[in-house]
View 1: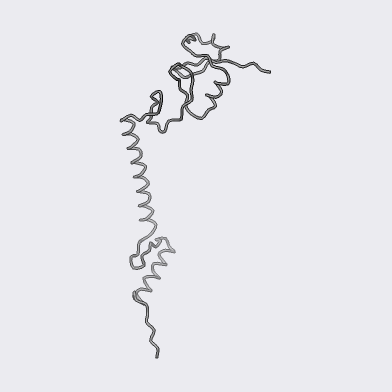
View 2: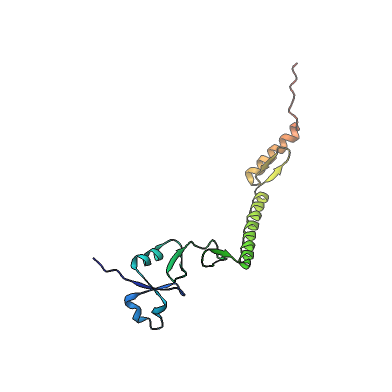
Length: 150
């Protein structure tokens, strides 16, 4: 049966230090840290979320930030007015890019023929279809041919 290792948690840097190696870190003040069990250490390190410290300096796992523009305020993710403006600009650019791509696909991908109420592809096959439709209109007009019984 293996022995469990304890860790020290620094609430300022959010780093863990193995208790048995703490003497190797001469620039660290252990008195300002919280001692953590290996189980708690593993829950934080392997958990899905971001590392943080509660008001007592204990390590906690918080949900991941909704965006790079959010900041943790100690209890929840908050969006600053600067972050909100940046996020809005980013979202506008994404939407503009999608709109432009759709426009380009429509313009480059076909032509709308109002007489038949359809988009027709402008590739080689589409052009041939369009020529056939135009020829049909030229020969037969837009009305159905009427049959005359003799």
